[in-house]
Image (cartoon, rainbow, N blue to C red):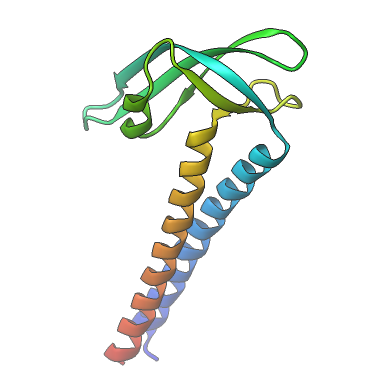
Amino acid sequence: MGEEQLVTLIISTIFVAGGIYAYARQIWQLRGLAKSGQRVVARVTSKVDEEISEDGLTTYFVEYEFTDSRGAARSQNVDVERRRFYDSVQVGDQIDLYWNSAQPEISYPERFVRDNIKLYARIIAALGLFYVFVNITVALVQ
């Protein structure tokens, strides 16, 4: 194996391993929230979409209110990352949340959690396929 091929394999291994670790960690955290978090019903109080860069990237914030298990009223917001969820809820809608009583600032809509677990799993699979493709390509170039 030549030096260029070895460098390519090392760089792709670092890239893929780092990506898989990051997304697997996100899946683990979201599953933990879904498993141990308290399920509460919230009411959407506002929606804000903001363009945050010259590249046209937009953030989608949904703000909601709910009563936690201790009876305290809470108001929180979340950057839902994708327009699909943002467009599917309207002000006044009720949504199911997972809320972490140990870290009260953490809450996510249930559908957001479920959709992101699926998305992150697909990204991990894509990274795995990319790694296989790079290894096959490097082997054929030899």
